Structures are given as C-alpha cells and as structure tokens.
Length: 89
Image 1 (tube, rainbow, N blue to C red):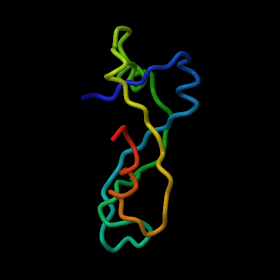
Image 2 (image 1 turned 90 degrees about the vertical axis):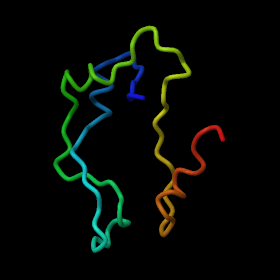
Image 3 (image 1 turned 180 degrees about the horizontal axis):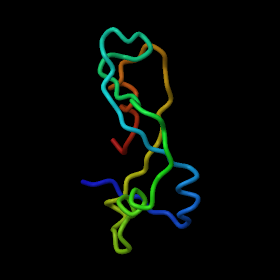
Image 4 (image 1 turned 45 degrees about the vertical axis):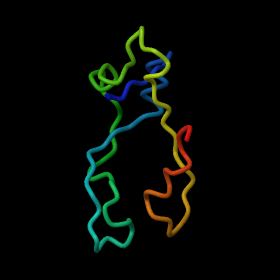
C-alpha cells in the first residue's frame, strides 16, 4: 500500500517534512542498533514531485490513511519493541 498524506496547506507540509536517502546500519556502528535504517545523505526539502507523489487522492477512504507517529525512545530497547504499542491492537 503506498503512503498517502492528507493535508490542507502544501507550504506547511513542506515546512514540516524533509527527506533523505537511507541505508542500513552496520554491526560495527555503535551509534545505531545493527540493522537500523538511518539517513545516508543530507536532508532536503520536499520537491513539488515529492509532494504530488504522496498526496492522498480526494476520494480516499479514511480506512486507507496512515497516521505517522514517532514512538517514545527507550535506550537499549530492540527496534521491534519501539513499534509494539502503535496501532489499534
């Protein structure tokens, strides 16, 4: 399922969002848990094409929208444990 974002103000979306290419952390990178997805380049603003590619269609049902949240971080907790409290289950 592709990611779609519903918004009212394109400028506000651009002000709040940046993107970067990512890579998987190596086992010897002590700053990250092995296998974590981390930025590999400089963060940049969304382009018009980026905005258009994630804009939700006008007739999208609520059941297909995704809310993106940042889970609370706890030092030493495995990555899969950080997402466990998210969702309706």
